[in-house]
Image (cartoon, rainbow, N blue to C red; front, side, top):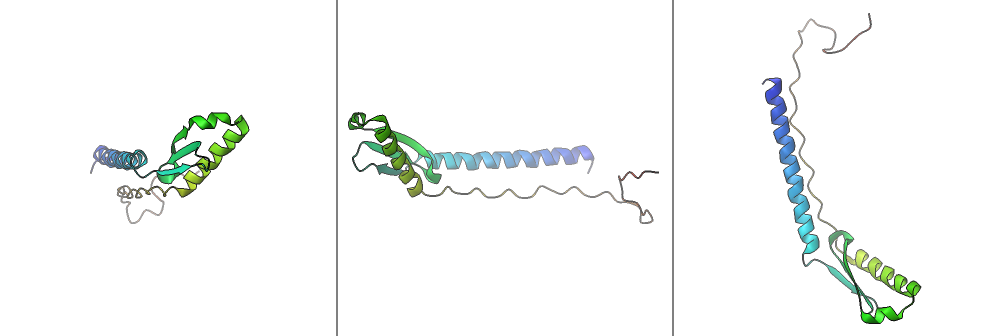
Length: 123
């Protein structure tokens, strides 16, 4: 196979790998946007956190009662609810590792040639 044909074949393989990764990412994003969320509500019901697969926080909701808290208390309540939602979320599905690229055939060297091909030696 000529060098150009081999490069074209490698580029096609790389494009397929990119398309496969894109499909994996879209599937993962669909899972995040889907119904696989974990919902955690603070004990006083002022903060609700939704976390998707992998603990990705998708939404933080504040009830009107949350406005009665001072900033420090509200931030602690939000942080605690986020931590609980993230730890309760299910792990992300791991995409499969891509297969190895096609190997280029090695150039044949004459049997009586003791030096490796494409090696430069100082004379």
